[in-house]
Each structure stands twice: as C-alpha cells, then as structure tokens.
Amino acid sequence: MYLVLAKALQVVSRINHEFCRITIHTMKQVLTALFLFSASATMAQSGTYHVTRTFSVPGDGKWDYIALNPVTGHLYAAHGTVVNILDKKTGQAVGIIDHTTGVHGVAFAEKFKKGYTTNGKLNTATVFDIQTNKVLGEVKTGEKPDAILFDPFSQKIIICNANSASLTVVDPANDQVVATVALGGSPETAVTDGKGNLYVNLEDKSEVVKVDARTFTAGPHWALGKGEAPTGLAIDVATHRLFSGCDNKLLVVLNTDNGKVVTSLPIGDGCDGVAFDAGTHTIFASNGEGTLSVIEEINADKYVSQKPTPTRKGARTLVADPQTHHVYLPVADFLPAKGSAKAEIAAGTFKILEVGK
Image (cartoon, rainbow, N blue to C red; front, side):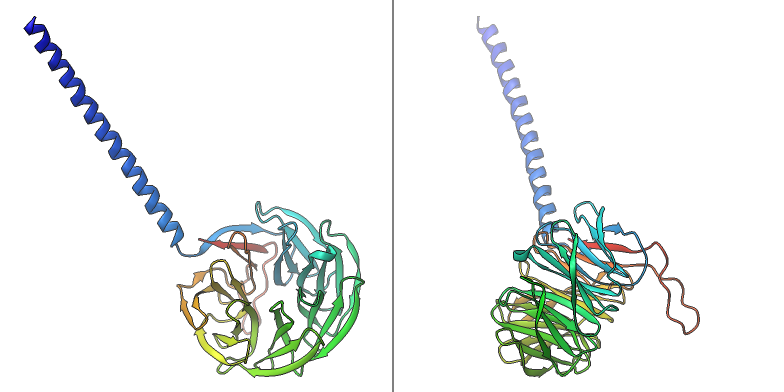
C-alpha cells in the first residue's frame, strides 16, 4: 500500500514539474512576444520618414501643385494640360479634369460642392463638381493664375496672379469675381488663418504681405530677414506662426501678429512647397534637389530639424494628409542634360511619391 502511494506521489511530482516547465516556457514566449511588439511599436512611432509607395500617373508634361479633395479623399495633381486624379489608397487613376492648359493648383469649396483649378496659360479658373469632377464653367482671372485656396472666413476662393501682382477673389456661390487685390509684388503662395487674415508670399520682393479678408485690401509688408525669393508657405494657427520656404535654402518662421522673424532654419535647395501637419506638429519643405526637409515644432519659438528624407530630383511641391499624416509629392524622371540646355522630362515617367513613417 505504501509502495503504491510513493509511486503515485512520484508521478504527481513529475507532472507538476513538467507543468511548471511548460508554463515557464510559455510565459517566456509570451513575454518575448510582448517585448518584440513593444519594440516594434516604439520603432514605428519614432521611425524616420521615407518613401513608402510610388504611384505611376498617365500622361506627360510639367507638373506643379498637388491637393487632397476633402470630400472624396482623392489626390489631384496639376499636370500639363490636365489634372490627374488618383485614389490615395490604391494609387489608381480615377479621372482627369481636361482643358486646363498650364494648370498650377487646385482648391475645394466643400460647402458649395465645387472645386477650382488655376490655368496659368489661359488666365482662367476651371470650376468643377467636387464629387463627379464634371466641369461646370470657367472664371476669368488675372495674368498667370498660380496658387489657389479656399478661405473659410470669407467663404471665397483666393487666386494668386503671378504676372498681375494681385489676388482674384471669387464667390463660389455664383462664380463671380468680387474683388481684385493689388499686392505690390508677385504672389507665389497664400494661406489663411481662418479668422479674417490672409498671408501671401511675394517672391520678387522677399516679403510676406498681410491681406484683410473682410475688406480685401492689402496691409503691412513684412521682410523675411535673410530669406530670399519665398515660394512655399504654411501656417500654424494655434501658435500664430508662418513658415516661408525660401530659394536660398532657408525656412523663415514669422509671427503672424506682428510679422517679426522668429527664427530661420536650413532646408534643401529648390523648395517650392511647404506644409504643416497640425496633428504631429511637423513642418515639411519639398526641395527640388531631391529631399524633403522635416522640422519638428516643439513650441512657438523652438524648432528641431530632423534628418532630411531622400525623395527624387524635381519633387518640389507637396501636400500633407491630416488624416494619415502622409506626404505626397509629384515628380518625373529627367533625361541627361545636353550641354547648357535644361534637362528634359522623360516620357511616361510621371509619378506621385508617398512619404510616411
């Protein structure tokens, strides 16, 4: 009887030992998996920006701005005589807006269910349906309409006329021009604070001019310090800061209340676009040299430059997606330059680069 009990205890002891061994092994596996998951998540959170996808786009010709439709989420790339429309999730072409010769920019008046293109060689803006992209009409602008935006304060479309040194103000309710604002310099890009103020980069004056969106009159002109020939412009309405990308490889930060220069930061060569992602407090500057400058906004007066992201030569404009925090840049390949002539665009190589972490 005692012998049977002793053997039974030995068996139970071995079972307990094996159970503990298996349990400890399993726990180690679980802990290892949790550690790897945590490390992976940390790396993703603190990872650097890089090109994540490339979308091929049909057609040839020069390109300029790129925009996001706030209703459909589609990408709109100004390209030669058309606007190419892509699904940002798949990269598939979903349509075009035709007969927009010399197109530069696209903007959307969501409340009015309309979109607008600036046709630089036609001195017009094409009006289209925000859902279907069906062309609804045209509006006469100043000479060489370039950048364009919708101002939510005035509920107007604002068009920068590069060769007329003016803004054309369009009422999307009836597509009539309601004001023309003389700026005293060539406008490159404009932004709004949504509270009655517009800010416009004057490329030939190396200034930013403040425009009253209540009266549509130009106000003070602010010098950009060491910044020269500003192009891209973005705004942080929370910190009252403007970010002006300049041709001499500087990003100048201005106070929107008084126009004073807060700081200047180095960026790449050939900048033509600046974007601010309010969700991540990140400033992006797209540089034609083939880099994307990434700058973290710590607070209104402190900024930290991150390692530049390699893109492609010629990727000089951009749009930042406030939902995914990805950045999109249009570009094409170039043929080898012959002597002093400018390098030509290689046929069939137009594309959109997606940059993310």
